[in-house]
Length: 306
Image (tube, rainbow, N blue to C red; front, side, top):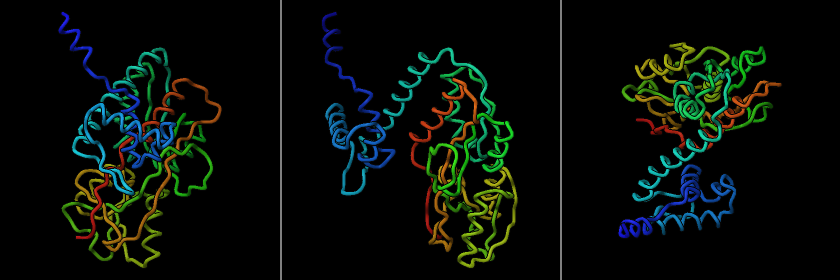
């Protein structure tokens, strides 16, 4: 028994605050930006990373003047750290929020309800089993109009103009051109476009950009469904634009090297219905905002013309 006790005493524990700072530095690309997220100074973040490296006895970052690159050991620690932090957060949430209950009507763009939100909302449901979620997909402008009519408690919406008022900014999303991995639709003239009907922000941004460079194009496929647009692009019918984090398998990102204009960024905001007071709504609002803030960088695979 004494030997077992001594073995336990010699075992080291990794503080979760070190892991959280480490993951935040990875996701935001620098110690300085991570410092603002975790509420510490850049020098304190650097010391935390050093403590973590000493604890695991490994160098986690290859540092240069501008970027942070993970070592192979760093990638291993990051993989485990994300799981440890997710379990930590689930334990805390499940014990602190056992009585939160109610119904929340959530509206979100098609591409997010098909890609990122299922994972986010699945984790929320695990820690808030008494909250019923009603999720509806539509174009952002339609969602905001419907919220004004009283249909939604909370709306996730994309905004084209950062100066627009309303909502809380939760994510800045690059907009990219997307084509099939197996076809070369982007080389055809006029350029075949797969679009959603108005008032789609992506549609407006694509047509405006092509018009500015006098690039001939034609609309070959219309769909209001993210899955329908994805299928058409995968089949090589045409190309489209998507938020970088929502690009589906079987597609690739296209760039200016392919003769296409840059599409810039869009701002993702949360809009809460005025006058609504609900603990379940507040929890969901905080959870979605935190999930986007802590999510991994967009999974777009950018490659030039080929």
